Image 1: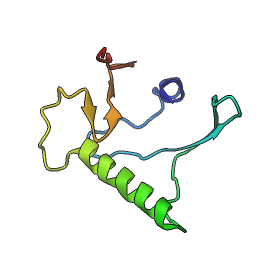
Image 2 (image 1 turned 60 degrees about the vertical axis):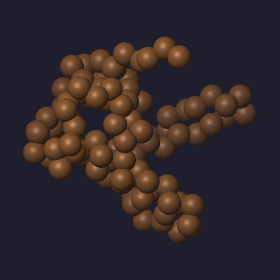
Image 3 (image 1 turned 180 degrees about the horizontal axis):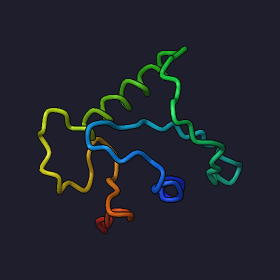
Amino acid sequence: MLRSLMAVQKIIMNDRHCFELYGYDIMIDDRLKPWLLEVNASPSLTSDTAADHALKVGMLDDMCSVVDMEKRLSGFEERVGGFDLIFQGGPVRRRRP
């Protein structure tokens, strides 16, 4: 997923006053290897089941944590809303267990 964003980082809108939500369609094969099928710039947020609804509500909650409209974050967090942050063209270093 990181590489898909890095591949288009020069054409992604970079505006501090707005954001985009991308949807990734991934297939897992019989060896548990993930395959990226497509990236959606405007993913559907409708849901047909309780599980799908819970998943999308959780994702939207995480997204709002990342956007930080209430200005609660310092800007130095490495992980927010269940997401690893990306900045300056590269991934944030991961903590070793």
